[in-house]
Image (cartoon, rainbow, N blue to C red; front, side, top):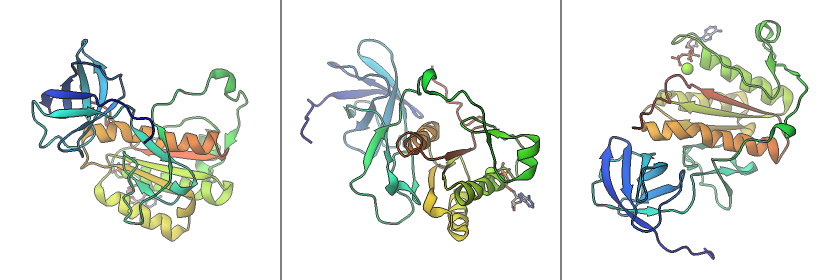
Length: 259
Ligand SMILES: Nc1ncnc2c1ncn2[C@@H]1O[C@H](COP(=O)(O)OP(=O)(O)OP(=O)(O)O)[C@@H](O)[C@H]1O
Ligand SMILES: [Mg+2]
């Protein structure tokens, strides 16, 4: 790296589940900075608040086993980043943008911060257009808006995931668009099943999958939606393609307590 920063080290002062407080004597990292434990570098923490002039409180995006009071933590100098670009199509990722489909890791790829500002109001479209899903019951009774958001509510096992999969299929096949599927708190088998289904249906080349599953810590599930959103924004803003971003599911998964 050409642009070398001075190393900014902090010390862990408390670990309560996924919530970690870190003391920085010199430079307090800004909110959203990604911190990594020095010794156990797989432990990543995102700064959520600055408690005072020397302490930050963050949420761990990985399990915190092995992290103890007094351990050194390194300021990575930037936020969490997601991979973007055409290369991510047909791949499966975790919250950090690591590929988890056991195929070759991506090399030479562009990374973008997951904390982007939304497009200004003046850049948003003012016309309202129906987005045809091809599922008649939806198009007639509860049409979806292009560029809009829609929520799908239902009890356990009533067919939400199956309906979303059907939509991916239609968007890719009929609209030549891109579908991004983000699984939050899903059962571990579901990602694998979905991957196989997409492959069999032939829609994998225009699909990206991002998972923060139920075995992953709350921090990963808290941020994985942002990783998926960043990828979706790339296809919308840079490639000007129709993107369907599906998040399965959100209910109560975001209840992370920060005191
Ligand atoms: N239209 C349908 N016709 C027949 N069977 C269906 C239909 N939709 C879903 N199913 C079946 O119902 C089961 C549950 O569906 P699905 O996994 O989509 O539920 P879900 O709402 O996502 O559940 P959960 O809340 O537990 O994630 C699946 O085994 C699926 O095969
Ligand atoms: Mg489901």
